[in-house]
Length: 543
Image (cartoon, rainbow, N blue to C red; front, side):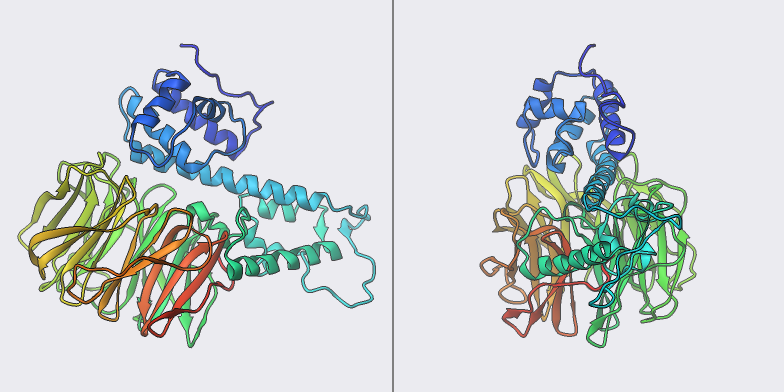
């Protein structure tokens, strides 16, 4: 085998970018080093979100042309995983490689920020090692940079693991007027991006939550919305809404590094609980010290099992919480509480079924609230579900076969108690499945949207369901169920601004709140009355 050799350190220095290229080469070697034309053809013939040319594949392997678009890299990784000897799970490999891609993306953005600051002429440091600016006749500037974390709302936008190292490099303690005003200008731009929602290419994203890696979820805490996010520095943080304003992002206790999107659920006592995947791919649990409290207990490790998907959680009234995640072999794993108490023991993880699945999504069904879980089979050919009515789990059964599904389904219940599931097809349609009767009966199906490129978010709002999803062109579209038990949906409309990623949506206190990445910044928009929207606004102190 000749193929393409990894670039030397003279062409691609050590760092996250090189880590990404070397990981791709490991898949390439294990696949027998197929020709770049063959890889491009496999992508073209497969059901992937984007295509690639053979020149682009070669550039990926050589580390040329900078960081590739994730959709293109994802397709190449999936092809190589399927060609690998022995074959590898393409979903698991894509998940693993995407984390390296995020790290390389953050590092590249930081390097650009560092180069921009370096272009500003600076005075020669005196013996003290502190650059002092000339006296400012207009008075002191807004901020100083002597301690990076003290620059609220600015430094978190410098993504990548070297941000603190760069700004607190020994002997270069920045206090220059140019630095202060440069950071003030950066903060102003971040706000303007949210308001206008049209500037693209800027990566001033809260906590480093980039538009391509928006990893945030929302829940109802009492009667108010609460948000949870995993930043690009892998910190799990939360933001509360109290008395008309947000608290600002704060880390959950215990430290640690986290991946993916956390899951939330309200337990039988009314506590909000959070489940998240660690950097080691284990699952941990946090829970409020008391219902509605701003203090948290955790993290509690739910075993040493490793997973390749984010968790999903559900409360089974009278039984306890259940958590679902995709195990390394592709089967769904389940862990359940032995009771409803917050300190009740857990059963330990066990596999369910014999079908490899994608990201599972759980819902408490009608009546006794028995749990039901939905997933796209890993081959993409069917939407499957399973449930437990207290007599053990009924095995996976298909809701639909013969279609090509992709992404993570969205699940909720309408005002009558019927479960409704929305899932994307690889051709950009959004397909709806709903129960004929609350809690049981046959399933009906209909296409309710087209041009959908992002996974949907589905909420129950004021007696009707609402769906939100990214549409072709980068807008955030939405549609509303025409009436509580109706199969009909309104025509799609779009919110203003250029949106990317998956939205986090919550309905609380009579209004819908959406957390999303707009123009590269973490913003919030909420419904006003029955027919309007507030306009995007930046989240204060975004993660």
